[in-house]
Structure formats: structure tokens, C-alpha cells
Length: 218
Length: 218
Image (cartoon, rainbow over all chains, first blue to last red):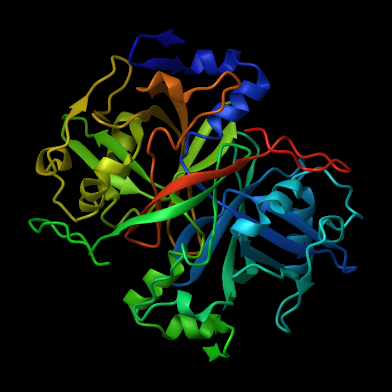
């Protein structure tokens, strides 16, 4: 680690030599602000699972595809196992009032324990999906498993799913042009391992074209 | 699309039937808040490229791996081509004061045009990397290409790289336990295609364990 008055430089050797906790705190912050979602699943016997994920990522709009990253041998195994058993899962944006419960869902509960019960989070079912939605989430999606990729570099798994249905429980979020107001839904974002933030809109810009100055839309 | 007073339900058939612009506005917002980064590259002749990406995702801490999603035949082709030519790229957190220029970098400039010049963004080089860093970004990483995955579902490409070096140009961002203060760096986040937000910290929680109440750290 090289420090000057104005800058710190850390290289890959420094990263290797960090203590585990220092390293996971730092490296988890480097992708920037992360999406904050609760993924709801159940196994073939109907046992529920609820877990926080900060890696849900947009992969495409047509078809509508979201991905997330999981480690098959870690705490998140229940989510992955359940998705492979039923083919279904729900992705629920975490609203401000649920951040403490969402974070607690990252504790390593045994498979037979339902995080819904332990955390006192209510759930509901849509007729089309073998996975529980959480009550109190404003934006939530029913997902169908599509495919997964084993990442050679570190043995993580990228899970891709297609949006089968979308629920918006605050109809004013959806604007005329399809734009969705995440500020109004009080959706939060995560940095690092454990820090929750409420974003506030700075600006919305028009489609960018060469030789044309950038314009605000709203 | 089914509407009640309290809810809207949209299914996969509704999504297929949307106009393209409505669909990309809506679906791009559904993963939640996204990371906001500028990726800097150059080709083997030293021509620069700068492009905004909202898909940079944490894949692992040891080794430190970040991924991002690109479409080989779209506007982002220059970034991908350059990474495959040199093996290097920079990831720069977008700070609040650069959001208009960052968004303008998404315009489809020809390959021979440097977005650095058109957008009047200054750059600098580290001795260890064949890719330009942007001046004015507080948190920036020099990346080495690791591997890529072709996503069958929609022909996108997941590009994975390893952090070779990390620069923090505001030394007070880095706390004693490795925690990084993204609020103090004024790093922004993106929702949808075109909306930029400044997140504000709500809470930081201790490591979650079963049978133990969740606690705030700071």
C-alpha cells in the first residue's frame, strides 16, 4: 500500500495480504452502489427461504432477463437449491423500512428454518409461481430460471432468469414512457457488505447522441 | 396489464407487446439501483475509448474479481474490442460532478473518436496498465482481463477481470476495518437507462448471526 497526502495505491499483492475481514469490506465496495433485493424461494416440500442479494443485474429487456451471483457452498445455497427444484423465485426490491430484517436474512439459518418466520416477514402467493413474495415490498418480480454459468475464476455461479410477472403495489411509480420512480418506492441500495443507502435523484438525461448537447428530461 | 387501485400486474406477454422504448425504460429499472462506472480502454494503436456502464458487479474478493455485461454488436463494442486487444481496462466510479459527461459517453461515437477529447475529460496513466484512467474520479481500478462468458439467452457477454491496482484519491475514504465511504466520494448510482442518483447512508449493520438481534455499527 503506497500512501501520499492525496492518494492511496493498493495493488493485487496488497489485497492478497489483507486480513479476510478487511479485504471483504474493501473489495465489496469497489463495484460501486449495488442493488438491494430479497430473493424468495421454496423447496419441493414448500419450505420457504428468504435471502438478501446485492448482485441482481440487468442482462436484457427483450426477453426481460436478470442475473445474480451465488456461491453453491455458502449460506446462499438454499436459494440456489430451491430455484433448481422448482424453477421459480421472486425478486423483491428492499424498501427503506425493511433494511434491518433484510440484513438479518444473511445470517446462516439451517435449511429447515424459514427466514420469513424468524424475521416476522409476511408472504403471499401469486397463482402463477411456486415461490413466496414478501409483503411490504413495492416492486417485486416472479422469475423463471433460464440458465446458469459456473465461473471458473472463483467457483461462483451466475444464475439467469426471465421475468414472468411484475407487481407494482404503488401505481404512481410507473410513468407514461415506462420510466419507473425508484425514489418514490423507497428502494434502497447497498455498499460493501453491510451498509444501506437511500438514493436521491440528481438528474434524468435524454438519449445521448454525438454532436448534440446532453439535456435533462425531468 | 392488470390494474387495480393498489397494484399493477404486468406479465411476460405484456412485456413482449410493449413498444421498444417503453420496455427498455421499464425493464432497465427492475434490477434496482445500479453501479455507475466509466470504463476506460485503448486499442493497440493507443486510441482511447470511454463508456458508461451500469452493470459492474462484484464476483469475489480473493482474488478480487469484477464483472460487467456488454453486447458485442452494440455501441459498447469498442470497449470490448480494446480489452481483448490489450488485456487491460480501468473502472472509474462516476462522481456527482461528472454525470452529464458520463451519460454523453453513451452516444454512438465512431471508433476513431476519443470520448475523452469530445467530452473534455482529462486522463492519466499508471505505469502498470495499458488503459487510461479518468481525472476527477476519486475511486478507480486498473483491471486485467480474466475470462468471458457468452450468454446464450440473449447473446450478451459477461466480461470478468481481476483488480490489479486500486487508487483512492481521497485518503479519508478508507476506514480502519477496510470499509470504504462511497458517500464521501460522491459516487453516484443509476436507475433505468438515464437517471442518476446520489445515495445517502441509512445504516450500517453488524455481521448477522442467527438468534442475535441485528445491531448498527455506525
